[in-house]
Length: 356
Image (tube, rainbow, N blue to C red; front, top):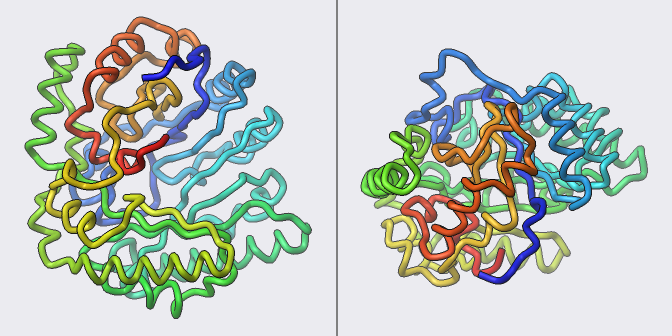
């Protein structure tokens, strides 16, 4: 691992809150296997804690990503975007799109650099996964945001659609992007294979947390567990062809396209959905993110793995993010990651790019 300036993080993920207004079937938080369904109390980061994080990290001008739950449910979302904007940092966030119409004016006033709207296919496919009426609400929100952006004469926020490829929608990607929506209005698109780990991965990870870090259980990683057999009927060749046609369109029309994995070949897709991750091309041999990024969840717990909150390196309700970032628990974690990957790394989208 190269020598990096680790005085402050360069990339900050904030889970603003645990609440969500949808129950998407494949969601690792609120979906069919999601651990959040068992929570008796749902947490959120206070605006004071968020302001302190932003002020502390300001010298590094970090890039921010906001998550939930649903980020637009946070009661101070406008103040959060304003604080990041005034600190001179850029921010992206995903949303299910159902609250875009309500918050459109605020999102033009304090525009994030990019908003990713999660839609998974034509209306009937999307709503089967995310809930009835979600598709129409999201499209109304996108159209209102685009109209207000044009009136303001601004290029921001950029608007993108993020699609998770699942057994239910994998045959409908082209129909969605080329027939169900007006792709010409979008600035970017993202195609991501459904994130998952196996039960064996979960058990191995739990064992490492107990042995190396003294963490006795890992309920949050359990939300990612899937049996690869549920993906057995997916047509990897068809997925590759659809993604290639989308990539050709985006290149021709100067639109940014992101894919996870980065190399979306038939062979890689087949290996991914059969849990043969380590035979794929363009994967990481080591993880640089403990030296680059940090994540604070809605309970204030700090970790380095996005959405895998079982290992806590400190809590911002007790000490500053700078103290945690430079502290002994983070150092211990970096020492481990300098030599090893974790059994849950393949459940992270960033595993599938050779570079950060």
